[in-house]
Image (cartoon, rainbow, N blue to C red; front, side, top):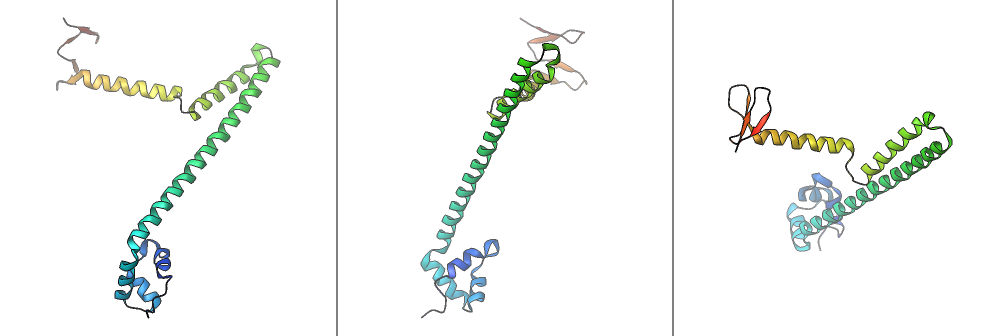
Length: 165
């Protein structure tokens, strides 16, 4: 009869990143060979991979739920701000209702951002990237310190580009 208890695999898993068959052997006072034989016959490596995969999936699910709850909370907050801003707009004359207008504007932008729609900042950033890439691909540095047009364009002295036929 083996001196290695049936819960040896549990101990092996609990060791975490520093786990080894030698550590299990030392803990239970058996040889590493005894642990290796048990691990092979019971498929410890396969079982450990399955456990780690399940742990990752559960962790991912919790993260999704956390982000979803945060988004719902933020949307509710934005809806409250929008309601208050609209109430203020109804009660105050237009000249003194600018705080309500600003609050409404900010809350609408935040709601769009939470819902995954591009904000002005995102749109501006995307436009900037597109413009930079356009400049990079359409014009080449010929080594003279100035950008020159591609073969199908001509650059005027004022820096404007004219399409060639």
